[in-house]
Amino acid sequence: MKLGASGIEFVSELEALRLYGGQGAVRLLKADPMNGAMMLESVRPGSALSNVRSDEEATSIAASVMRTLWRPVPEQHPFAAMSEFDGGVEWLRTCLANQCSPIPTTLVGRAEGLLRELASGQAEPVLLHGDLHHDNILSAERGRWLAVDPKGVVGDPTYDVGPFLYNRLFETDSPVSRLKRRVDQMSEEFGFERDRIVGAAIPRAVLAAWPAGSSGEPWRDALRCAELLAGLTT
Image 1 (cartoon, one colour):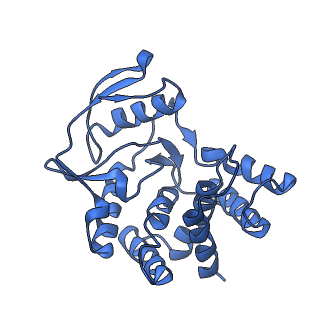
Image 2 (cartoon, rainbow, N blue to C red; image 1 turned 90 degrees about the vertical axis):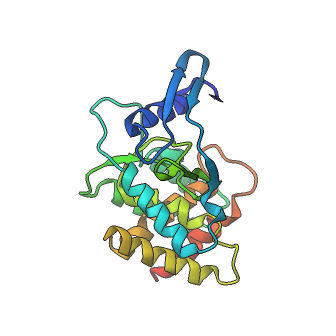
């Protein structure tokens, strides 16, 4: 049983799970939207992908789960557009105009431009998980690995790669090498250009570090990842 506020985030997760239908994600058994409750299948053994020692193997598993989850969305749906998720383009523009963000202005400006470019691209939009990282992928007897806690976002598939890139990136003495290898491996797994993955991950990391309505300190891991990604294209 999972309980939460019956708002737009709950509805988005619920509808994403319904569309997945247990393919690549935990199966939705019952739902009570009025009370913000849903019953999900028990995922066993339920070990998180973060427990896989080989980062190369974990990256390959994550890519496989992503491929299974990406699918067309119905004409009517409750999901946020990629360009609006976590504040999206509008929030980045606000940060630039008001200088309200602790993120370096040059990085915010670059993220805003890249997100606008990605949103206006030719890629067919698909349903994205929205927060697919090591701790949201669990081992399962059914399907081997299943995603949990989808946000439900619609957009270019490369936008789903970001959370995996910046998650657990700094649990190594060589984060730059790890990041480069993850990008290269994802490029090979999906057949996407390397620069396309990097260009999608920069705004995703910036918005993860400082999403709409933030105050205080940014999430340092996501910010550091965004800075490293920006360095990969210079």
